Amino acid sequence: MKFQDTMIVDWTPEGASVLDLGCGDGDLLALLIRERKVRAQGIEIDPAALRNCVAKGLNVFQEDIDGGLSVFPDKTFDLVILNDSLQEVKKPDFVLKEAMRVGRRTIVTFPNFAHYSVRFQILFGKVPVTPSLPFEWYETPNLHFLSISDFEEYCRKRGFRVERSAFTANGKRTRFLPNLFAQLGIFEISG
Image (cartoon, rainbow, N blue to C red; front, side, top):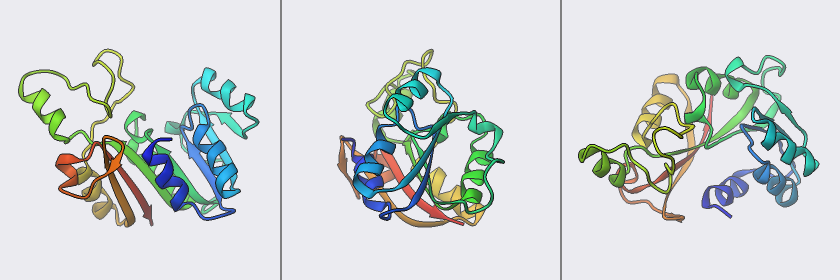
């Protein structure tokens, strides 16, 4: 199990209503249902991933989250999750505002583009490939590259409150200079 999945499970209240945006194959949703007895719903755009979710018996529908979440009234969910999906959408500001609108809290995880190994590769004229950014430039699903500091500043500007955060390097929690040494940021935010 990935460290971020462990953190998300730990941060999810028992029996919560959860919406996972860009839920992929549904592994995290299935884990939350099993471990936290949540009422879970997912949204996924990829047809193959959607079929895997359905095969697991998950309540997931196909939609492009860049189009918004207008089918959901305000504060429908206790928790909305954007697990490694914010950097892949075309309109991250809009998607995050929608997540905050329909959820009481939102958990966001993303690869830290300011990790020292990324900086080092860019310094030598290469587009970075790292464990948290594992794709070549021509294969990457990532459209937006952000750092931990970028996201913290974004939350301040938007008036979002960071309830808690955690950072990982090599699958373990790190606290020392996370913008430089963390490969992944995990944030729980509220409006």
